Image (cartoon, rainbow, N blue to C red; front, side, top):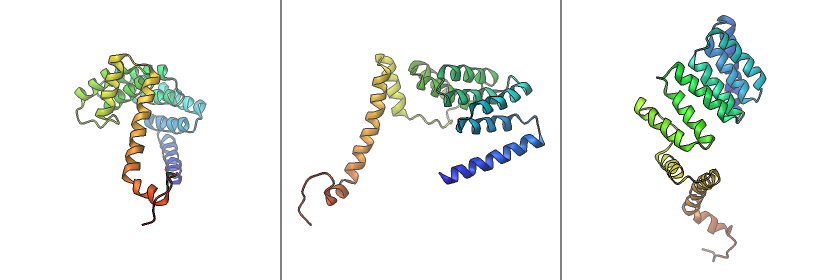
Length: 188
């Protein structure tokens, strides 16, 4: 949206200025790299990451950023390795575990994703993840029965389909009133 574009421009300006003021600002390099990664300018993003790595090769924020850049490029195995390095650098940061679990899920390594999310819940029970209990149960079912990734996608599609059906039931009167379902209804 327009607001998101404006916020991205402002963030780009602020982080660029932060690097000008303090050339050792690792978070500035990482934030700019993420902005470039979202814009699919991976070459520029990796140049910024290299500068940050020169400053501190063991910083978890840098490795977390690298993992996200690989996720943007749908290179999940490389993303997993980067998130593991982030956890090694800072084992107390919950977002590193959450990102690793998401990368495992995207690469259909469901057992590993469940294990990492379990570690996350013991590390920080108050961390708000984007995973819902129903979704976690579905992942457990898939890993238990060794279901194929295609079936996993079908289950995700079924969840979306159920939501659409629910919306149709709730708003079904609107469809019937306008005859959009192809049937003839008597005028009220």
